Length: 287
Image (cartoon, one colour):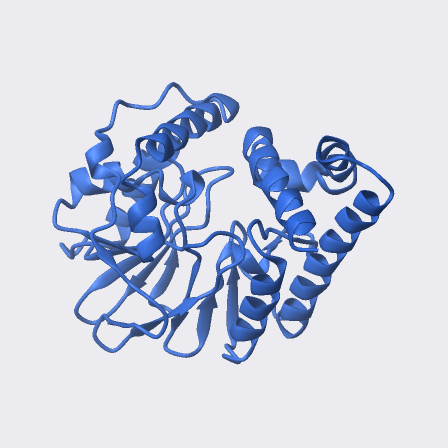
């Protein structure tokens, strides 16, 4: 556990954890662009013995998990960004890169930072694709890749030495109070399958997206809470749809019932709307 270090650097960002192997190092997700300088400083304090950052592992292609990639490349130009093939393809599209930049600027304004530095979109890319079952050997530490679709089509989870799991946002997001927020977007069915897949690893420790290590008391019930949250979300949407509510009205009701103070601290309003409108559509289309 001493080789897994939290280097998360800003509000709203995904958690960012540095994994230290005997030979190589890897960063799991890297958060938003607005706090990249803090992230880099945190990493450098850990790697002060002159070690390099070899890998950045992306759980998916959303801006709050990948925004710092261009800045990390400037400091460690040889770093390899690893992600799912779908994420690799997404980051070749101008529309996706534009959305990432716009949401990143919005987050910077929200969290009281200045506008983003002008980074090169060519640096926002995936160097190598990874997929289910792949092993990343850091020397004495091995990271197993798990495909866990549901939040996105490129969602990956990471299992470190068969003991510590970094589940993708597909499983949900836990708040500091222990409340579990469902976070699937593209598929309820795939989400349930992905949660069960993570549960079957029997990992001793769980690192929840946007939170960090799950407490010892919550760990035994974490996966059940994930499934309960997904079921609650799906049932809420379908009940309103059956009552004749259209997608706009369902979103407004969903926002009233699910976007509480803790949820707002985890995700800016614009991202909440984009993600949950897509989620509502997917539930209705696959009812």
